[in-house]
Image (cartoon, rainbow, N blue to C red; front, side, top):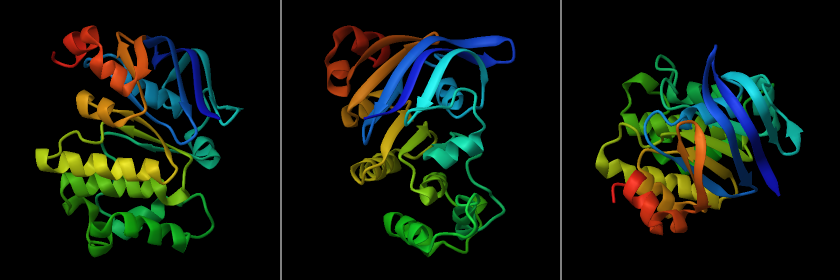
Length: 234
């Protein structure tokens, strides 16, 4: 079943158009990665799906519901979570308060969801009373993902999850994303570490100048000589 369907998407910020005729799909429980050069519009795709850009044309549907230009709160209620690259935790709140904020649309915080997040990210339970702003970059990224998982989304959007992490933490972050996907949550990820992202994902899209350039399985894109030369450093 197709969870996310983007067709002929034109979007940007104000009068500035960034995306032109972008198409992509994410199937149920699939792991999809968007790669491409800096400035290609990768993050704009994610923000557009989540209703955070200026819609200029095309459609976005989630689970057969048209969410083109919808309010982010309404999108969350449908089962779509989003972890932005920057400013993705509330620094003055504790770890547990951040996680509770992930369930703010509910009347009460679901204890089973909180327990599941702590089980997946044990470091968060250890630091549950610590202010989020005093945690390391990797711990903050885990917290941001944990908060997005509090509503048990069907699809999780991840924007550059390895950005700014120490090299020894990058593999751990990717392993956590693999585990989330293997547990049944579909993933749409923008990632600077293109080789590793394509190695792990089911399918990948290469975006260039705000337009689709290539789409194939992650392995096929890794093996494509032109893709490797132009976008993966040979």
